[in-house]
Image (tube, rainbow, N blue to C red):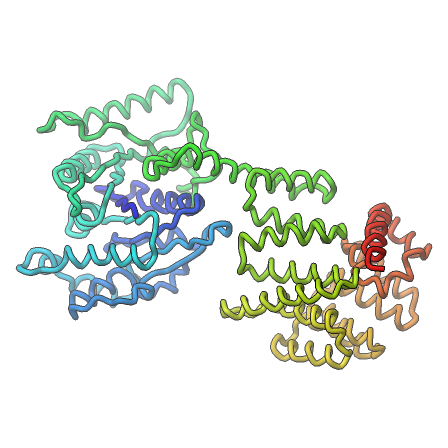
Amino acid sequence: MKTITFYSYKGGVGRTLALSNIAKRLNEFGKKVFIIDFDLEAPGVHYKFKDFVLRDSVKQGLVDYIYKFYSEGLVDEDLSKYVKSFIVNIRNRNAINLMCAGNSTSSQYWKKLSSINWGDMFYQEESEGVEFFLNLKEAIRERYDPDYLLIDSRTGYTETSAITMSILADEVMVFSANNLENIEGSKQIIKSIKRTKSISGNNIKTHFVLTRIPGGNSPEEKTIKNKIVAQVYYQLNSGNDSKEKLVDEIYLIHTDRDLEIEESFKITGDFKPDSVSISNDYFKILKVIANFSQEELESYNSILKSDEVYSKAMKLPRDKAFENELKYALKLNKNNVDVLRELAIYYYENLQKEEEISVLRRAIRIEPKNPTLLSHLGYALVLLYHLSDNYDLGVEGLGYLKKAVATEKDNNRINVFVEVLYCQGLKMVHKLSHEEVESLFQDLLNRFPNSQMVYNSMAVNFQEAGDLASAYNYVYKALEQDSGNATFMTTLAEISAKDNKENEFYYNLDLALKTKYGIEGFFYYHEFYSKYFTNERFLRLLDKYNVLAKFNKLLKRYNTLVGSSS
C-alpha cells in the first residue's frame, strides 16, 4: 500500500479535485483505492464524488473515529461504519473506499472536532496519538488491502497536516498557486518534510505541483509559461541552507474554464504528450504517483480505444459492419463486458444462438455475479431448447435464471425483469399448465403491483389458455402504462388473431413494426407465428417496413435450428 498525501499551504488551488481525479483514474486502471478526507475544518472529498456518495448518506467519519478514541480511549474495530464504498467504473469491481471527515452539516461534528485536543494526543507523556494513527493505517491495509491510500490534508501547518505528512505519508504532493504567499509557504513545508523521516525510517518524497497556469500552446503562450516555471523553480531552490535542490521538477495544472462553472472529473481520454489540457496534467501526476510500466500504459490505452470504438459502433445500423466494429473493440479489450453484452443482443436479434451463448459465457467468466448477464444467458439457453427441443439446454438455462434471482436477493434487490424471465423459463422447460403459470405470475403481481411486464405475461398466458376476456384485460392494463410499447402491441395483435379479428391483428402488428419491433420475436414465438410465414398480407406488411429481407434471412436460420432437432 502506497500512501500519498495531497497538501497545499493555502486553499483554492485545486488540490482536492486533483486527488479525486487521480483516485478515479487509478481505479480505472484496476487499482484498489482508499481515500481519507483529513481536511477536517473544510471537508469536501465526498462532494467531488457527488454522483456516487449522497451528502445525506454520510453519518460518521474520521472525526467520529478519532473522537471515540480521544474521549473513551477505545479504538472502534468496525471500520466499515466510517467508510463509504462506491463503484465508479463498472468494469473494475473494486470499489473506491472513502473515509469522509464526517457529517459536517451536523452540529455534533463541530462539537466533537473542537473538543479534540491534539496536544494531549501527541505531546503529553505516554500519549498514544502516533500509535493510534499508525494503527488506523494498518487497519485500512488489513481490512481493505488498497494499492493506494490517498489523503486530502488540511492547509497550512497544523497538527492535522503534520499527521498526514510526517506520520502517514510515503510521498507528499504539494500544490501551490503562482503567488509569493503560496510559494514561500510551500517552500517551508517542503524543507520541513525533507528534514523528516517517515516512521519507517525512509525519506518522504515530495512533488511540487503549480496550479492555475494559463493554457495555450502557441509560441508566445509557451514562452510566458516557461518564464513562470523558471521563476518559481528559482524561488523554491534559492537561498536554502543545503546545496541539495528542494524541487527537481515542477508539475503543472492548467486552468480550465469549464471548472469555473461546475467542478467535474477531467482526467478522461488518451494521454497526448503535446496537448495542453488539465486531463493531460492529471495524467502526468498519475504517472509520477503510480509509476506504471509501459505494458500497463499500453493496456490502458487499448481499454480507452476499445471504449471509443464501442461508442462509435453504437451509432451504426445493426448490421455486419456493426458486428465487426464490436469485434474490433473486443480485440482491443477482451474484458469489455459492455461489448460482449451488446454482441449477445445482436446475436439474439439475428437468431445466432450459439454465438449469443458463447459471448454470454465469456462475459459471465468476467462478471460471474452479474444478474443481468446470468438471466440473459439463462433465457438464451431456454429459447434454444424451445427451438431445438434439447432438454439439457433448457435445464441448464433454468439454472442460470435461478442463480440470477438468487444473486439479486443476495444483494437485497428485487428485479421484476429477472423474476419474469425465470417464470417464463419455468413455463417453457417444465411445460407448466396454464393454471400453474397463472399462479406464478399472480404471485409476481402481488409482489410487483401494477408491473406492466407482469400484466403482459399474464395476457399472453390467458391468450394461450383461450380466456380472451382476461387476456384483453391484462394487455390493456400494460398498454395503459406504456401505450408505445411494441411488445405489448404484438400481444394485443396475437389476442386479436385468436379472437378471429384479422384486421385488428394486422392493425396492431403494423403499429408494433412502426415502433421498430424486433421481428426475431416471430421466430422465438414460432408456435403462434409460423402459420403466417408464407402469408402474403403478413409478408407485404414486413416489406412495408423494409424488414422482409431480414425476415427471409432469419427464416433460413430458423429452419436450420428447427431442422437440426428433427
